[in-house]
Length: 355
Length: 170
Image 1 (cartoon, each protein chain N blue to C red):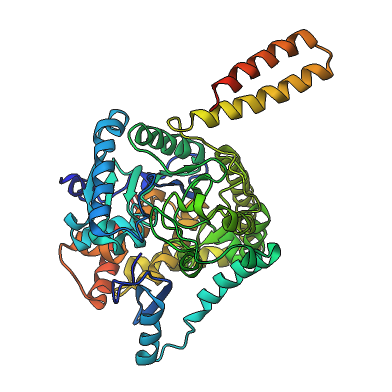
Image 2 (image 1 turned 45 degrees about the vertical axis):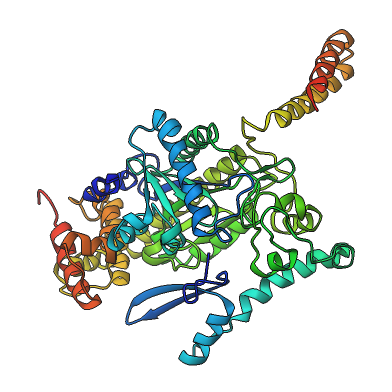
């Protein structure tokens, strides 16, 4: 039961590797499936014993079925993971904030960080596949595989008319939420983001911030996902989101060209100043760090700033979060200490190589 | 999810606090949220999210006069959830609730999704009957096309296949 430790040692996640289609704008692709067991109260009504029964059933299914296709997957009770490490899993988008709060009743199964199966979140099962760049079809294929292997051992709650049942009727049907994380500094700087993103509702899509529902869009990062889960099948939902994402990517590229043309040296100045601040500042809070990282990343992507691996930028977005930061430092720190250490980490990591 | 404060009632209110740049999040039940508001003087209305949800139901219900036709004391035999507690929390209690409250749920689901018919994946196990039904629907479409093209012999073959499949249904 120490699989999570190995994972956290390698604090990098596979989804941060950042290679693949449109990787400069589409940071990651995610597919999440909500599933429930037949005839067992949903987590919000389940007592501790019932919750444990669900965990046992899922563990059995993971060990006897899912492992055949995903050999490294391992289920761990949340109560066996320490506080800081749970925080890191959350910052890396491998578990949700809601799972964190279910502590005593929840568990999570992780493989090499592409797959995570949350047990007793809002639903009995939340199967997630998280991949770098624009790979929604691949994410769906893998999540579907995990779903199929779990289903061989578990009796899912399925309603002939309504489809896969879920605790909240907003997820019923396919139970699928597909999303992409987009880095859109061009659209934000040209003040087009509002227009582009508000048009998404016409396509049945919603926009959220970096850490999902109710969070802000820090560092010009936006999460776009399907709103409805019924009346369209999984392929249609994925195709729709993929196509719209491609259009947003085109708009972002266009906006970057406009910036280059209209601002010229002013743009270069702004982006290099962001680099200078990251390179030399001594105190840095999360919000400012994300905003500066976004600008430097834009500079790297537009080939204005050379010699920095763009993957470091994705990685740093996560590493500067409070949990990861404290893990890297090896001790708990208060917010002021974190700001100092964050600035230190950024100075170390953001050096231009082979200059 | 239960309220983080009392661990007894379901959490229905979600609070984000930012103090000195430190963000903290809380899930509370309405009672604890109200208490917290009184003691800390948060300038926010705990009834807001509830009202939003209730109005959703009321709209769906009034559209079909459901409030009159269905007694709200209906109780799910498997998990004990009542319709009125569903209305309050916005969450169903178990898979069987979808059968128990099907009539009341249909309009709510239509409001949310613009549809009340699942057209996606069907589980392999337990879904055999549904797979057959789906296949029959596809074959019927195929038969229609054949009839229109006046390929009656082929259509007859498809009809026999449909009958065979229909025999497999309960």
